[in-house]
Amino acid sequence: MKNDNASSDTVASGVEITEEDQIRANTYRLLGTLMARPPTQEVIDLLKQVDIDEKAQDSAMAAAWKTLSLAAERATVEELDDEYQALFIGIGRGEVVPYSSWYLTGFMMERPLAQLRQDLQRFGIERAEEVKEPEDHAGALCETMSLLIGGLEGVSPHEQKTFFNDHLAPWMVKFFEDLQNAEAANFYSAVGALGEQFIEVDKRYLEMLPH
Image 1 (cartoon, rainbow, N blue to C red):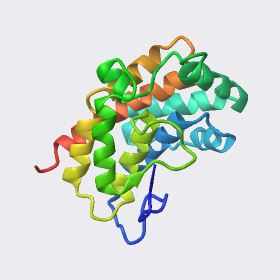
Image 2: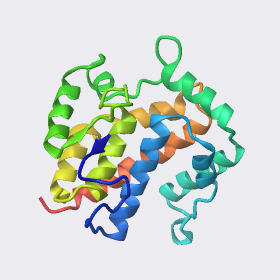
Image 3: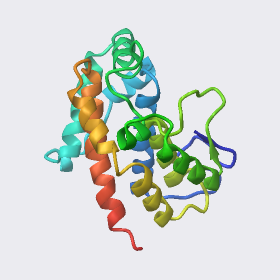
Image 4: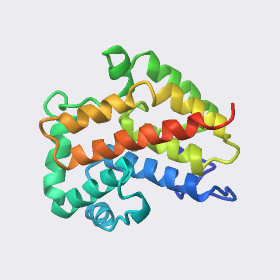
């Protein structure tokens, strides 16, 4: 996903956000990267170096980060490419279908995608030319949330909350649960655990925002 007025950095031209929101934006961007394509060696190396907050060692979120970091230590680019292909592409389709339309209607390219496109147009966000996947792909939605939090000037917390409730909350926890339980998932089981915990945490965070 791209926006003509925003850079790919967490803090874009003149947009200042809190440390907490920067962490949220970065986590959404990481999940978006992991869902959009097989991890590169650079991404694997980054995950190996995740710094777990000692004060949060007992939290489910910290445990999910640690599990993903350990999974990265055992991973190779070649293995993760094969795993990604089996999970999300396959022959015909992969074991897990990472689209909101599929989860909400049982079909691809349905009303949830049309509604999403309307909202993306309002924010000035459009699919990058080289991307062939529909905009309701889990990776694209995570990348969009990252933009809304840290890359687009003038996007209010209320608009973040509305977008999350409309396009992520109804299905993404179930998707990440399915990813954890997929037969082909090894490294991506850890990605699913982090995704599930993070979406639940962000849901609680957004619920505390003023209406």
